[in-house]
Length: 159
Image 1 (cartoon, rainbow, N blue to C red):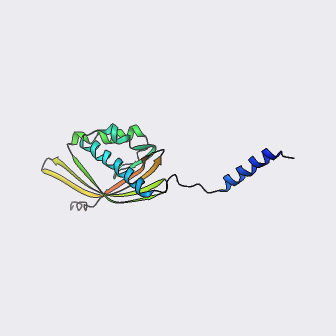
Image 2: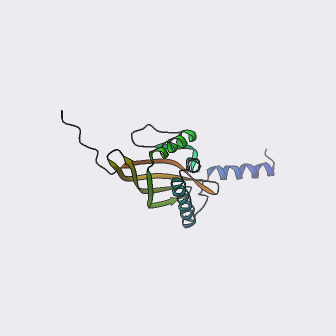
Image 3: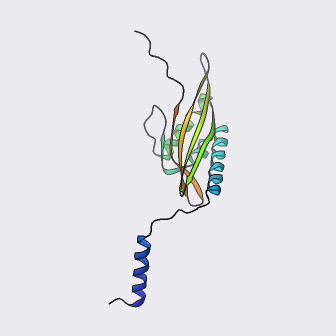
């Protein structure tokens, strides 16, 4: 027979285990503001070509999915990806199209513009991206980052 204290603990555990998890916050406006602050940090890091600051926005288990490349899953490899951009003397600008927060996850839709010098003049591209953010304590981190171009690829050369 269980003692009354152990019985109460057992009942409390059973009730807690049967309850669905709840979101850390229900203040989506505050969460959105916090994520927009992280996005502003990202824009500043791009402008200053600071790949270490960019990778600090990513979770340890983040996945970067650039077009034309396999998934990049390690933070050090994600940092190296961003570091390879700086020698291109490219300009990348980001604009939030929408941001939806639901509990501990948020989905950001972004528009981006890319410009870089090329042998025959300036190379331009633009497109859209999806970034999934996850709450990490009192902050937010990127867990998935994928983008693609809106520019139609050139037609294959005639044989």
